[in-house]
Length: 233
Image 1 (cartoon, one colour):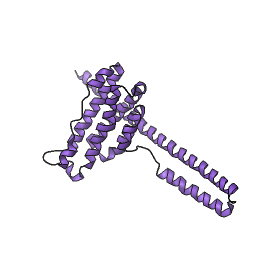
Image 2 (cartoon, rainbow, N blue to C red):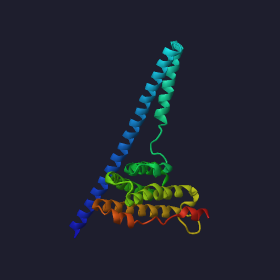
Image 3 (cartoon, rainbow, N blue to C red):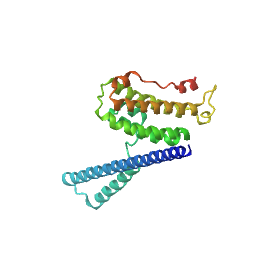
Image 4 (cartoon, rainbow, N blue to C red):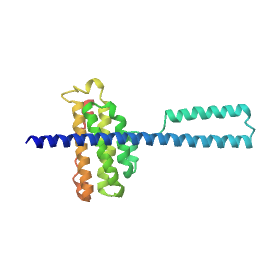
């Protein structure tokens, strides 16, 4: 019936708007978190510089006008450096295996968001959906023991297989990404691989919610699109 189709379209529109709103909120949270990290580093740098200047003035020699100018310049250039080039942030893929399980979804999400612009448009949409699922998974993992077999399954997907898929794609020369070599299409394979990840995250979230950790640990699927080695061969 036409009314059913209208209701279905309206529901799809509402879901899409809700997802887009959550993406905006997540991006805003990342910006606030980054700004807070920058400000904290500037404050700590200022305190350290002030203490160093006090120790110098009391133990070695008065600063004088020249010393004050030097301290001011150190503060200025140091603050600019910390604000313009903050350490940390999204980090790198090599940092993910060392991340605590409770923080792994957020760290993976931030790293994946930093890679988004370098991916083709269909992959970017999948990355957005994966980010939303990682947000949900982050809340679910807080009570999960690192030693659980289920935790190993989740860590393998988020810290190894997903980063390997994205970085493997990025190692392919840009000119070869659409056409590939010997019938391989890296763009298509990336999208297919991200679709597998998206489905796996949905499965993991459902099984965590149901408390079926044994099923989560024993029914893991693995990414089959390990194409970078084939392209390099």
